[in-house]
Length: 499
Image (cartoon, rainbow, N blue to C red; front, side):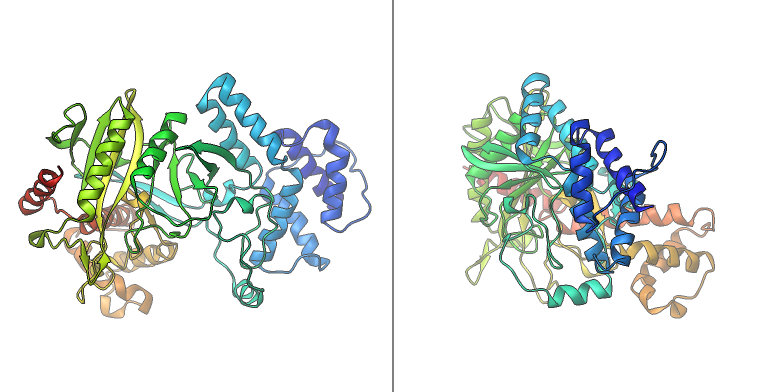
């Protein structure tokens, strides 16, 4: 039985091209060593398999049964990654493959290969990504993408307890460091034996390309500094983003902002996110053209989007860097009491930018989304952040991916929305909702008032649509200039101040 599973994994490696026929005996022996087995009985006949997930489950179950692997979700993930690490070629081979394809077939062929490779090695666990719930909601701003993220493994209580007991280590410094490549992991740090990165040079500095293990959209990649250095939005950021799309013109790339609340989840390591995908914001039109003095050669304007976005387009990337830096400098120091925008309070800075770069019709394009992280007693999590009445759906930071029109919603919503659907169909009074649904009560009453026709056949589509509209409001809350007359007048006041 276990010899069959080992041969299945070897055959999977041969079928995906991770290993070559000359490697077969060597790889089998390496797998035996990893499994702490010292003999192998060749299975009779042809060895077939259905999918990678079931092969790995068989092997890990056997390792658990023999005490080779602890029985908790994190230990199992560490162990199956160790098995996949045996099949994963060394970094030098991966990089040579990537570079050869880049030179001979072009950037898209290179990334197509690397993306498939990152899935074949199980670094991107295809079978987990499939569990994510995804849909599209039509809104006045375009079609917004909604996802409920179920692919990030939830730790079980045994794994949480083991992580608490695990010794703390400063190596690798964080999950974005280059030192993760090939790292075995531990109870409080994921295994990365099957992880490979591609070195890049942008703005004459060493960076790397990898994919996100939790793919939120097609070819969701991470571009990260070779040095463990904090996130910073500055002139050099625009140069790096434009250099990247010059290297990979079929990809967009953007950066989270560099301040808490409006920034991403990892501010300690300078990194960008990109991919082969067009978000609703990228499709949104210019609602008001603008000419910046001295930059008449750059097409510019306000984008029709609930977050406050300035779009710059030019064939000359150096001109975009120049103008973007001017806008950033102006915004850092800009206050406008009428729109409740303050550059700083008590010496704490509030203004920054979320920048996104892409190629459009052979020209360079930069979207600059104005951000402000001021808090008040009424809005302790941020004035330009989802307001409290939306927290039942989305409470977390609005980072780069959300800014562009893709909601990444917490996994708790899957269960809550199914239970809420049952309550809505049964017309259960909200006073009788269980405790975990109480936070949705006001929203549920509003949905029923607007959808008296709601029934068992339509409830799930109605709820999905309503979640999408909540996300549209989340974006409106996070926009520093609102989509009304006062907001648009304020936005123009800022543009006019950029000299």
